[in-house]
Structure formats: C-alpha cells, structure tokens
Length: 313
Image (cartoon, rainbow, N blue to C red; front, side, top):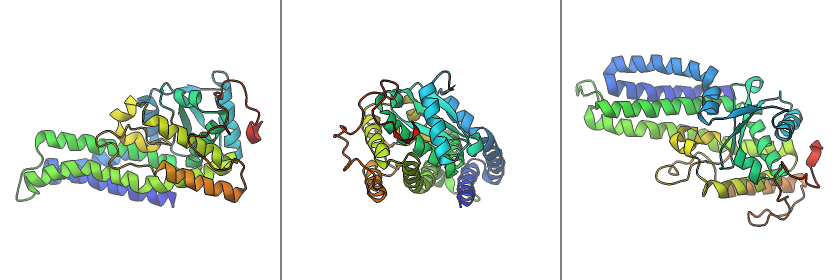
C-alpha cells in the first residue's frame, strides 16, 4: 500500500507539472515538463534526503560527538526492529524533528538543538520513536519526494507567471486560464501533501508510542513543540514551505497563507488519540495537560538523568 500511495502521488504531481508546462509552452511545453518531471522524480528518489538535510544545515553526529542522542536513537531503533539510521542535528531554536531517506536501510533522523534543549529525555524518546515509525512505515520516501516535486511545481508556476503562460487561444486556455492554473497548481500540490499527511501522522503517533512504550511521553512532547512553534520561527521552513509536512509539528508560523492548508492534524486531536492509546495500553501518567508538566522532568535530556529512564536503561 505504501508503494501504491507513492505511485499515485507521483502521478498526480507529474500531471500538475505537465499542466503548468502546457500553459507555458503548449504541447511541447507539456512534453518537456514530462521529461523534467521524470528526471526530477529519479533525482528525488536518490538525492532528496541529502537535499533536505543540506537545506536545513543539518550536520551528522555519532556516538562520539553526541553520545546521549545517538545511543537513544540506537536503542529505540533496536526496539523498532530497524537498522540504525544516520543521526543529524539542526542548529535551530524551534524544537522540531523529521525523518528522511528512501528506505529503512538509507534513513536518517534529524532533530533541532531547540528540541534537545527544551524536552526531557522521555519526551525526546517519544519524538524519535515517532520518526522511527515513519521510517518503518516507509513514509520517508513519500515525504522527501513530495517536498522535492511540490517545490519544483511552485518554481515552475512562478516561471510561467513571469512569461505570461501559453497565449495561443486556439490550443490553450488563454491568459485568464493560464493565470488561474499558475495559482492553483501550487495549491494542488499542497492538497496532495495534505491528503496523505494527516493519516500518516496519526499512524506514526500510534506506532511511535508503542515503540517507546509510553504514549504520554509523545503527547507531552507534541504539546511543548506545538506551543513553541507558534512563537519561535523557523526561517528555513518559512522559505521552503513545501518541506513543512516532513516535520513532526508544522514548523510554519501560520501567518498569511502558511496555515491555510495545513499538512498536519490538530495537535489536540493527536494528543487525544494518544490519551486513548495510553488508556488501552494501561500506561501510567493520568490525563495529559499542556500546562501540567509535573509528571515529566524539567531538565534537558543532556543534563542530570531523570529517575525514570524508561525501558532502555
């Protein structure tokens, strides 16, 4: 099913790409766009993960440079039955994280410095488990290729607006239709992202909670990250909104058009689903509240260890 969704997604985005190409150069433009789309899809399959990591200035860490983070990822990956992914850190104040890679054997988990500074070890474990769930569900290929192709559609649409579109009224839609398509094509790409993202996030929350064994750790982390995302900007995400769906929480500020078609389900609904899962699993911690954090250590996971370190030591 994951590969079928990927094929449907790429077909839809390729169709949008060809539509914009037709408006720019007619039938020849559509054919050229098809060739470009095929090349972009192939390039994205092999390189989109490196592009996204480079875009956010992520640097790789290991057991020597970031032992606490690396060992936590390794232990959770073992619990998830996954190969050890590469681990990256982004120098970004906003707490957030994403996973990328075309398959579990070539996967990476990236977290921001803000995430490591503001979350407890338990909450960080919940976030990492969520990202590992994306890898196990083969969502990462879908996320990285979607970001690449959606960004390409937006750039091509802007190029078409600059040149005014295909003006041959006998074979094209005319200038009004061209302008409309130039505006609607990027919105269509956003809708494709949104259609698959919401269900994917719920599934990753559920599996991630089961990987770490404590749904309320992830629930607490989601509340903190969502609160911070509204007040701590992520400049790189604002410049590249096509990558917003990759993060565990929407990194965009919500100003202007950013929040019109959000790719993430509501944080409150995600927390409610985790609360229900916690009750089903018999997890401890009671009712979650974003304002009541006394059940969770206030120290960073890189400070003094908490009394309860979870199933990994």
